[in-house]
Length: 113
Image 1: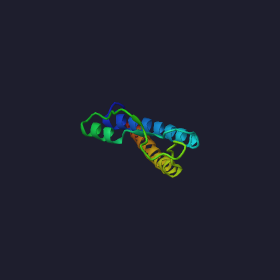
Image 2: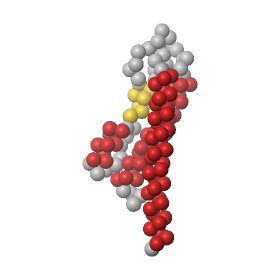
Image 3: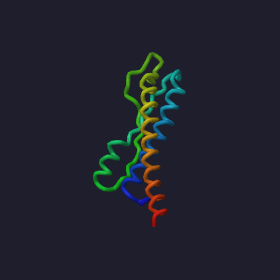
Image 4: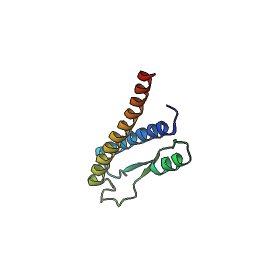
């Protein structure tokens, strides 16, 4: 059960979302740092392909934002970072609930056996 495609995918999703949250916080912390380029974390498309192939594992990809820079060479956009943060929190909550559901099913099965 804990080695299922679903649990592997949920683990990757939670790790990826946690990393995205760290990167978003780092971007916001550096909003006024000259020449700082915002970073992004990607994993969803690789994870979807992996799940479709029956594996459930995927690597996180960290990259720099290609958004236009301001006069100080910084390209952090607070609006984008805020939206990313909200979306990440919601996705993390959803994935956490899915993991909780998986464990609830195991607890129920153990109680009834």
